[in-house]
Amino acid sequence: GYDTTKVNDCKVISIINGADQLESAYAGDEVNIVLDKTPFYAESGGQVGDTGIIETPNARLEVVDTLKYEKLFIHCCKVSEGSIKTGESAKAEVDLKRRSDIKIHHSTAHLLQSALIKVLGNAIAQAGSQVEPTRTRFDFTFDRAVSKDEIKKIESLLNEWISQDLTCTTQSMSIDEAKKSGAIALFDEKYSDKVRVVSIDKISKELCGGTHMGHTGEIRLAK
Image 1 (spheres, rainbow, N blue to C red):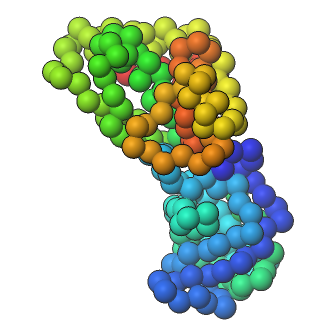
Image 2: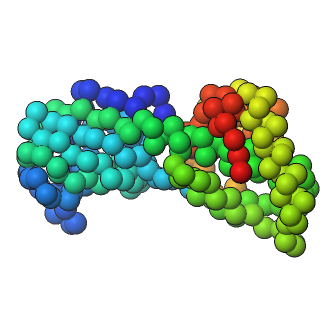
């Protein structure tokens, strides 16, 4: 879900329908597919899963969602053409435009948290988020409603940072190193020993498992 949007040498490990594992599926069937490797990002941390296409020598599948079950990536598919069998070779390709739009909205969510803290102070705390291709939703706790003037200040600050075309970088480090670096984390979130820290220049530093733009200028505009 990070380094590429296309893999040409996958293998179909399992075809699942409900509680049943199938040997094959046919045009019109809706099944879950497990591959030995995948370019798809699975829904987690508030970011929606990727969509796209899986192709085998005899079938074409539309991937309508990607979910994670423990460490397995589950591709929720509709077989649009032909038939697919367990053990077949496959190609997997993410919807690139949709992935790009999701990355834009995830980077915006990080900037938004920084803008909220700058305008409203450290009393705000993230309570959840939803990152989609068409919008980002950021939930936070605060002891009063945000005024219209404050919303204007937050929006203005976001667009100032976007226009500066700030660099966004990702590092992998231990959870202790991340905390020492000052990265913001969700209090009740469970993190593994190794975590990803996403930094946007000196504006934002957060523990995050999502996908992001390389530069804030790619966001273009925040409203």
